[in-house]
Each structure stands twice: as structure tokens, then as C-alpha cells.
Amino acid sequence: MPGTPRWFEHQSAAATEAGKTHAQWYIDRFRTLAAEGTDLDGEARLVDALVPRGARILDAGCGPGRLAGALQRRGHDVVGVDVDPALIAAAEVDHPGPAYHVMDLATLDLPGDPFDLVVSVGNVMVFLAPGSERTVLARLSDHVRPGGRIVIGFRREPEAYSFARFDADASAVGLVLEHRFRTWALGPFTEDSDFAITVLRVPTHLTT
Ligand SMILES: C[S@@+](CC[C@H](N)C(=O)[O-])C[C@H]1O[C@@H](n2cnc3c(N)ncnc32)[C@H](O)[C@@H]1O
Image (cartoon, rainbow, N blue to C red; front, side, top):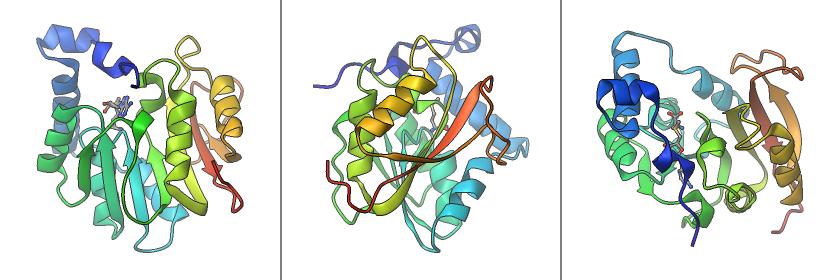
């Protein structure tokens, strides 16, 4: 059995101040940003550039479906998975189209063809159950076709999960680091960057 994701133990000051659970605060925050016309599609634009038209894409830790929906609207065949049922319920309302599943990434086992690309954004890696990160990377890798990619964005949180540990875990499961950026518009990553967007390649010979 996987441990409890940090997500379920996290309660931000902003959510407490608003008198909401963190999940509800997060759902409402993105509804407000969308209603205000904020550009929320930066991740989708980068991912869209990396895949063929009509690609099969998994949004791992999709939350309320912002990215899954944006990729589906760009003509891709998208599956969204998240461990929090409240967020999947919001995704089905706010961004219908992708197939959504409540599932823990540490035990991910989806039927069907492998994905061209798996994407995981919004700090999912630092919200996983402590110690489950390598297992999650292995489960994601097992769902990608040989030669496909995994794109992961998360902020620097050395106590929860450092970039160095991430690199060691990715390498241990056979993933190859292809690119790293600081922003979704390809801002260059430097050693003092607080955010890393990493593009990993699943080798053609990989078997895990
Ligand atoms: C900050 S939210 C980001 C959600 C979404 N990717 C976005 O960008 O809006 C972090 C997400 O990680 C999910 N998560 C954490 N641990 C998980 C796990 N083991 N399996 C699946 N999802 C997980 C949480 O449920 C939450 O939706």
C-alpha cells in the first residue's frame, strides 16, 4: 500500500483564511483565474510542441483538469489521473472531455495503449507520499511508449524532494534527462532557479 500523499496533509494559510479545505481553495482559485481571463495554458503550449497531432497523453496528478482540458482542446486524446476525488469531480465539471480517474500514481495501472507523453505539473512531485517518488517515476515510465517523453514541473523544496534526488530517481528507473527549463516559455534553468521543468526521455530499449 502506498503511503498518504503530502497533498492530503497540506493546508495553506490562504485556504484556512478562506475557511476552505485546501482542495476546495485550489479548485476555486483556478476557477477565479480562468474567469478573470488569466493565461493558464503555458504548460499546454509546451507539451503540444513535443508530441505528434492527436497524441495520447496522460496528465499525472491532473487536479481540477486545467492542463488535461487544454490538451484535449488541442486535439489530443487525454487521460487525467489524480488521487483526490474532490479534484477529479471538479475536473469533470470544469474541463470535460478527457477520461478522468481517481487513482494513486504510486500504483498506477491503466489499460490501453502506452502514452506518447506523460505530463505532471503544479508540484505533484512534492505532494506525493514521502519516499514514493521513485516508484511513481517507474509507474509513469511503464505507461509511456519506448522513445516517448515525461515532462515534470515542480518547485525547489529541498526538504520534501530536491532536484538532486529527482535526478537520481529518474536515472535509477532508466529515464534520460533531455532538457531542463525554468519556465514554460523555455526560460533557461540555472543552479539558483526555484522551479524546474524537466523533459525526460523513455529509452527505446527500456524494460522496468
Ligand atoms: C498542486 S496540485 C496540482 C494539480 C494540477 N496538476 C495543476 O497543475 O493544477 C497537486 C496534485 O497532486 C496530486 N497528487 C499528490 N499525490 C498524488 C498521488 N500519489 N497520486 C495522484 N495524484 C497525486 C494531488 O491530489 C493534487 O491534485
